[in-house]
Image 1 (cartoon, rainbow over the protein chains, first blue to last red):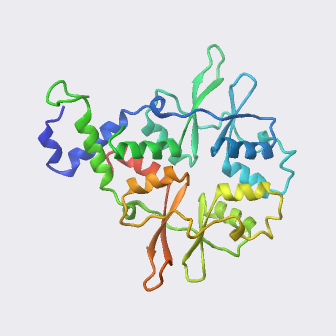
Image 2 (cartoon, one colour):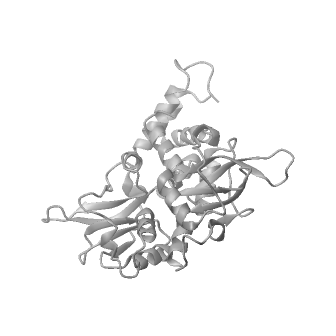
Image 3 (cartoon, chains in turn cyan, green):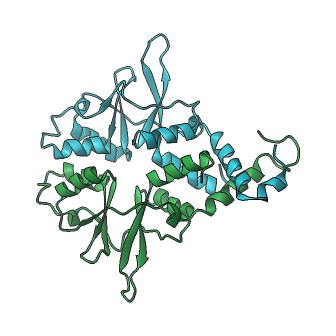
Amino acid sequence: ARPRVGYFLSSKPSQALVAEEIKKIKVGDVKGLPRVIRASASVYDAIVNMFIEDVGTLMVVDEEGHLEGVLSRKDLLKAAIGGGNLQKMPASVVMTRMPNIICTTPEESVLTAARKIIEHEVDALPVVRPVDGQAKKLEVIGRLTKTTITRLFVELGEGRS
Amino acid sequence: ARPRVGYFLSSKPSQALVAEEIKKIKVGDVKGLPRVIRASASVYDAIVNMFIEDVGTLMVVDEEGHLEGVLSRKDLLKAAIGGGNLQKMPASVVMTRMPNIICTTPEESVLTAARKIIEHEVDALPVVRPVDGQAKKLEVIGRLTKTTITRLFVELGEGRS
């Protein structure tokens, strides 16, 4: 451990300390509940669902709860201006689908997850764990979003996290 | 790693230091450029504009660049499922308009701005400054979003901010 006086010698040690504290926070400490929908649902129903659940990203799962796709507001807006019938168009047509989904795990640091959000320009990451004995199948157990990170930033700024 | 001796109580001193560092960061240090549109533009054009500019929130300004409204993806999605003609519907019908817009200023702390984002459930805040001699008129000089805060979180976690 660094001696306490060291923190105030210049801004560098405190920067390092902030970084150290942030690196300790795991996705599992802050993740939210996943909001899921089936791939057969219509784009219209997906949009309505997004408003009801008050989320910006829906996870698309199969009958066993395994991740099939991710639906963002951006995907749905694109569909909306495409001119098709939103009530007849299935969510599967516009979603980002496996294996192209950027995921995180409860054990990953929020810092690494936040980097993925920025680099891949997405609003949210599904928090997943592998399904025993089924290669490439992922169970969705949560979501980590820019809102989660903004809330965490507020908590850190208030000395609560 | 937490020191075994030297601190009176668990992790409190480092938490307080993280909070202190975060409180120093001003909106003006991290804000992005505003992406603006006119209130007379159609909802369809606003959505296309959002894709072209690659943003999630557009600021609606009058001919002098003064803030009139804010358009979020949520506002546009709501319009999209409403069943109207998006090419004929003006943005002014679906935008959040003055004086109901939550704003920030370059001098405000990012912490305070982030709290506004969470409390008012918005994705972005226009960064504004008052217009000389024109009460209630605001010039839009930037935007602060959940993406800005996520990027800042990554920089803090990497010891770069």
